[in-house]
Length: 199
Image (cartoon, rainbow, N blue to C red; front, side, top):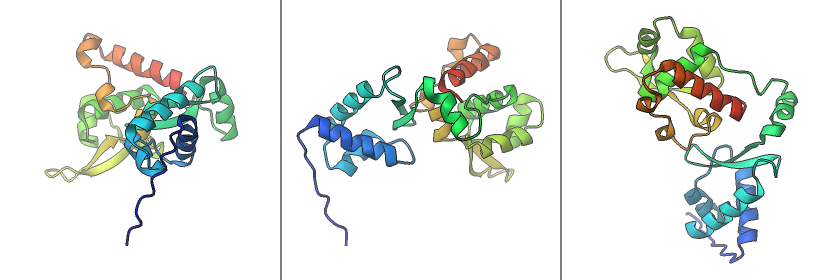
């Protein structure tokens, strides 16, 4: 039998901000305002006010951790000035960049996905097995079923991809039309975003 939800109704935006802060720290993925409301027992309007307080408190230049809206919710990340130190803590460079092949593969899957390896290889004109395997290992891609006709595994981008590139969703990707049909411009834009985010 499900326990009834006990509503907190703090009436104190600062206290609710601290509760939301704790929820975001312990969460393994970004949380939406609705999820924060459900966990805290507060309504979404109160959550929006609490999140605004957290955004002001945890912003670049003010805090070592930054609250950002990504992958359909909110999550903390290391500030840009702390990213290098955080990378050393985990014994891997935060700035370890993606290769041109990885950027191209991610762009294809983000814009056209889910895609199979043969589809990606046909678009890129080269074998992509190693690139896809590397992106799977890094958590930027995930399997998304099989192509009904060929039986090949289909791949999609993950919430980590959205988080690394600072996207709330794939709908926030630059439109191809805005890039004047220049694939190099798309790659350069993705690289610039990744450099800012410490991908």
